[in-house]
Image 1 (cartoon, rainbow, N blue to C red):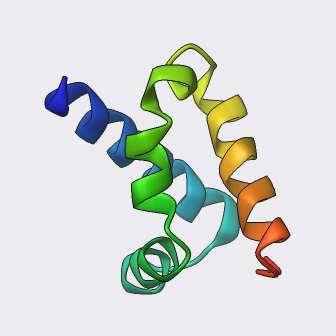
Image 2: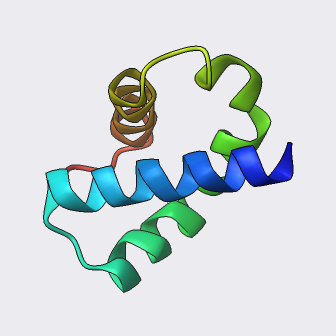
Length: 70
């Protein structure tokens, strides 16, 4: 299952970067500081049932709730 989680993290990270225009270092820092990597890992059971677009929207909603403006 670890491979599946990593594959999802890679897809969502790429999509996030494409949508926000942020670079890899800045995006990774944001994901680390805001707990997004942990969120994906802990919520994988539910997230993998959604489309990647819906999962990414969940991430953006979480970031907005934490006060991150993109």
